[in-house]
Length: 139
Image (cartoon, rainbow, N blue to C red; front, side, top):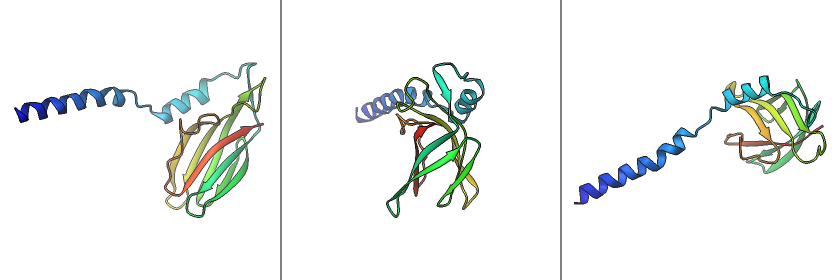
C-alpha cells in the first residue's frame, strides 16, 4: 500500500514537471532569430545607445553604464557588448530592448547572450554570482 502510494506520487510529480520542461526556451536561438528577422517597423525605432544599470552584489555598488550600438564596455570583470537597441517610437520612455553579449573576462566565458527588456528584467536575466546587469533605456 505504501509502495503504491509512493509510486503514484512519483508519477504525479513527473506529470507536473513534464510541461515545465517542455516550455524551456533556447534563448540563444531565440535571440539570433529576433536579431536577424525582426523588422524595424514605424512603431519601433532603432537606438544608437543604451543605458544599462549594473550592480556589484559584493560591494552593493550600483552604476549606470552608457553603451553605443556595436560598442563594448567593461564593468568589473564583465565585458558587455551591445549589437542592437530598440524602443517604441511613440513613447521612448516606456520600454527598451537591447541585444547584449556578456562575457566574464576571468575565464573568457560567455555568461549571457540575448535580448534584455527594460520593462521585464527578470524575463531574460543575467545569471552571475557577483554581478547583475539590466537595461534601463534606449535612445
